[in-house]
Image: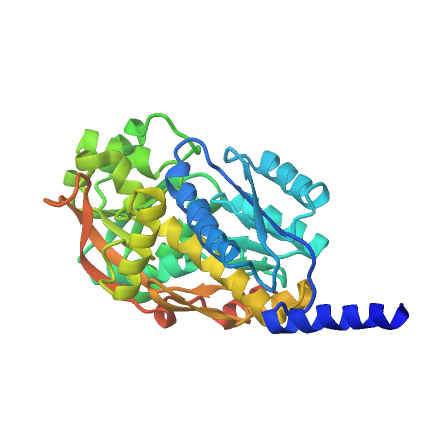
Length: 404
């Protein structure tokens, strides 16, 4: 009887090797996705979630990784830091997720980075753009997939330095992202063009219902150009205000994501033309086979065009599955070692996750908003590509900020 039992166990083990089951990881890999899925920010975040799930569903349909499948659990933070932090703790303690993914809110992302360092689980920041996330506040457990404010600053500062503008005004949301992107652009612009002058600044509360008083004050100061530093919640409302007041016709302005589909689609043909904006992705650019394939896959599943958020969600899911495939283990520390310095193939070309600061190195595209005969929303034209190496944050500055 005993010999028969050993024979049965040997046959099971052999069968596992034949099927390529690999090392045993007999559990569902739970991933907590928390972000603002209601209100204006959802124009950016829904695609992060959907592209992430699209990739995970595809992996699960093929049997998962080493026979283990992924379960995605979502929470709506409603753009509130306290609520998001509470939900994160619930996901970790009650749902026992293996990692956290998400949030467009930079203040929440920084709080989650601290929490995940204490809990020793990975956190992938998918849309929050504060440079502190992978910069001075970075740690072993946090990864920033989106471009950050330092990268936006480098790209926008270089472009604005070539313009004839001398007198500037900075205006934006009075929270972490707004100040970080405003400071990032100004720091780079001042470095490249020391003669520029800052006439003043305006900072409004997140969710400001009426931009007219601010626009009136800015125009009264008569700057040559304006840097608008709004976050995900106020980008679309500000574009509507700019169009309604004719702000874009009275003074040139730059706003990160102003030329991106997620910002322009809700405004339709009533979006202001001539606005300078930056983004990591356009569904029509780059005009490559990989991008066309991604657009088709996303459209086939969700029946809409993908925005930049879809790129972030897709890259994050790829990094996670590729790391598990490599480690053949559920050990968190081995997983992090595998993610560090990983490179994945994406619709915008190969994207590396830099080992030193855990920052994804993405190309940046800058364009100007213009009406289109093909779509019922504006698109970017005169697109200029800023390669990852030119937009990447300075590692020496990061290590210095971390006290290393």
